[in-house]
Image (cartoon, rainbow, N blue to C red; front, side, top):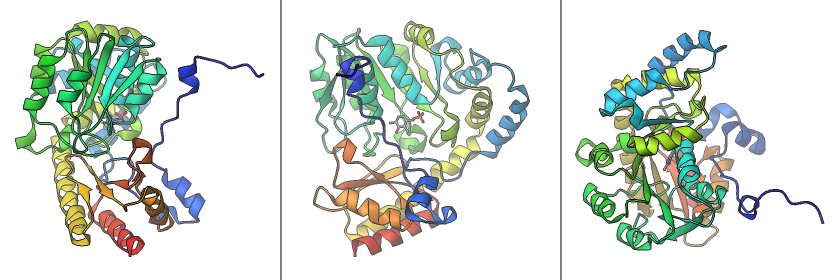
Length: 368
Ligand SMILES: *Cc1c(COP(=O)(O)O)cnc(C)c1O
């Protein structure tokens, strides 16, 4: 018998499946890279903000030196934007890093972590990587059933993940629902409120989650620069929590987890409100374009508050994979969500108007 390395729970991990890269699809299907439309990873179709590009170019000269381990300028920008002290901020190599740090800091093997059935794929991965026990609460109308999640909290529960808006379904929890939930969570259970898509919410949908952080020492709000800020390739995210949590996360965080270029770009992007506004507007317009076409086609979809839409590809359990493959052959990359337990569905990111149009034209052909 060959030697087995590592704990059972590590060997049993299924790697994260990301959106297919453009270069891979070009190779696999013999397509021209320039004609491929990627709507698979909820990236910003506008690309990175010019302000961030310029900041990165300026920072390049310092690349022989280690990054600022404390991220002074970036924390300064976050602190100013969200009106929190700098020691309430944890920087992450993407918000993925923040989610993993929470699992490492708060969960021992065998302890339970709660999240919703149709929620972000990183939650089960982060849980299993530390030997935690996933307590997956059935979704309600494709979203979080918070009352059921509150009931699921047990003696051994250490962590709860909530995504709002949720990925891959795009559902949204109202402030009142979250507040009612937080009131029921015992003080020793840490709640991660993952707001990766917050910047896409309309002003009337916004709520003040930082006020909850002030009220609840067991709450951490996580944000990313990967979506509306257009910096997915640079890997920057951050958590906001009271120092009692921040302090622990910073002990296990790699000291240089956010590199020099990423820090510089993130500062510029955080202050680039014009770019953020343009991104949100383009997204709202693209959402109307996609959903109006889905309505006209009689396609079922889940109303979304993010920069993507989950739509039903067909009624059988091969539908998602089948339609995905047919779209790939036409150079359109969307995201299959069979691994999320949604084999009849596909998730499409909202792109530029012409990208949305190319996707819709291909989809019509595929479904005809
Ligand atoms: C995209 C996404 C993230 C962000 O990941 P990064 O590591 O910051 O790129 C976090 N949470 C959810 C729910 C997401 O969809």
